Image 1 (cartoon, each protein chain N blue to C red):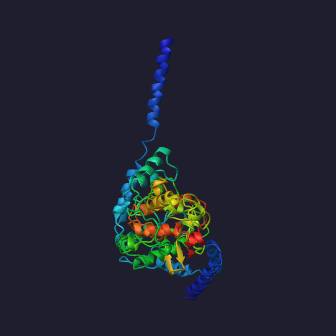
Image 2: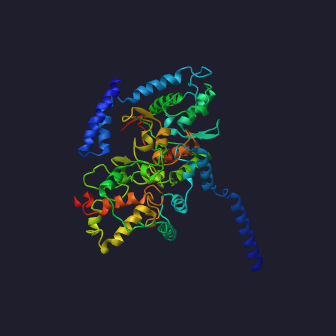
Image 3: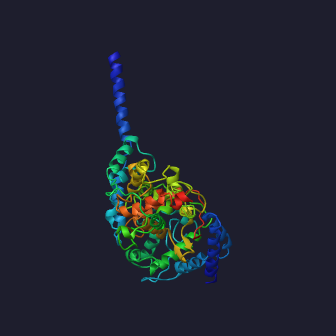
Length: 219
Length: 265
């Protein structure tokens, strides 16, 4: 009797599973594959902006799939570690260039679009003011990134050549070279890693942020 | 012409206002108000209405039997329900891709050729005027895109993924600029497009007349320039991905009042 009841129950359960199986919707579509197909069909080359740009590295793929939500910590850490490996510190150990050239680059939002003629670093600006406040004088600045006004001063950099400044110089260079090394899904381009800016240009941007005589710190 | 001159003069005064510390939004709201009786978009609307009714193309037919989703010839209210699924083409279409269909089936134009024509030339000028008039016929109405058809829901899901798709030399996605509220590029306010950003903002503000260059931009052209600045390759006019983005933004904007054709910097 006992056994029979159990068997009956098991049979009923089995029937439920079968029913649920029938009622369940078809498995979710493979959106990633469908999107890839759609991207391929929808974009074409134009000038320097070729369709190979749509190819994602692991970092961009993970951050895209998160659809605006955060990444699991382990994934974020792995992305940051992989990006950290790409950071090339200046070969000659010189981190600081000319802040006046840096200011010009910061103002310059050009480069890398299909209306630009060349992908050479010399054709590109830093786009900095598009997203950051930098000097006090420039009031037309964006707010996607944090304010960089008094960047060096607030971080206690009074002499960039002093040994005490070394860590801050390396950290800042790393941010500009590859911002994903410290923030997996940062909105900031990876200027050095992506070949948008060269070491000399990054040196000038470093000067804008860290030279005590730069208007960022002096005004 | 007079309206255009007024627009230019007011742009100059609005730019002056910016220098005095007013936000871009304040400046634009101000000259929008001043231009209430003379938005140059009206010139495009009038042209668009004429083109809708005019017999044109290899078949010498008008577009008056074009079905924009509410039945042949029903224009009023159609814009705020686009993009949507169309049974005859078995595709989700936005305003521009639907107009291409009508220009091909009714008038005998080659839709593929028109899609390949650069903005501001040939039949693209027809499309921008038609978009101006058709959107104006829904001015003041609220966005309410249908999501009843499986393809409409699929288009939304793919549009969402396209919105967050980061790539290119700058790692940009639509979401890089439009994923958070209250952000700016330089002084330009950026609408958050993952939600309803408000009446007459974002999706509810295009097509628009651009004072800076005197051009009428449809949503297709707006998206095209977004992708240029995103450092992406070139999106095909009325391509599936641009339509999916329209579905994503349009569904998110449910309830937002359309002010199209709007007036822009």
